[in-house]
Image (cartoon, rainbow, N blue to C red; front, side):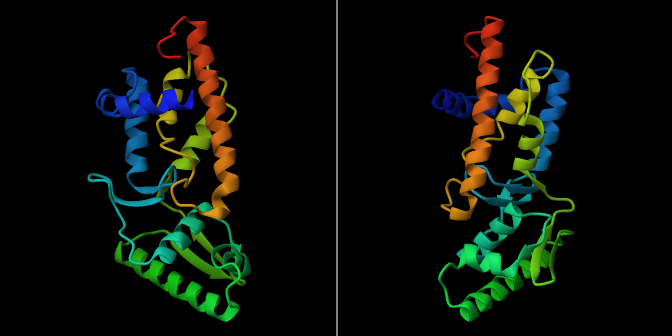
Length: 213
């Protein structure tokens, strides 16, 4: 099932964008809104990307891998404070504490400098020995995916919306990065996706649309 979906996703991505999903007017609006939000935030399915230009899909070009990993980690933990010690354990396991702390401070400085250069309204805060990335305007693809797909009972009233949100799943969560700290979320999101695909297939079978199933 997953392999079949991947083929459909790759072959139909261009047509899907041009037609606005299934052709349904309401669904076309939903699709356009999702595309706009995807282009102005963080993509975490497959590769981690910080998209900075909605029109061109331009992403941040990172000079240092650890800056990128820390940003991915902060997006992963978005909108909540994370103890500095937890960050050090997850990103610099086994490293000398003083050196790891120095590396962290450098990464934080670089990220804040980049956010300032890009005039981001997002905040990277430090309080009570903890850091928090607060997302104010930028969007994360996994938020929308979970909001729509979690607990969804697929039927005729929402099948178009399910088709749209399934396109967000371009690969397992940060699967291309090899971040050990992302594994638990990767498995949880994969389970949501598999459940959604099974329900969509069952719906199409129920209406004898075997090609879509």
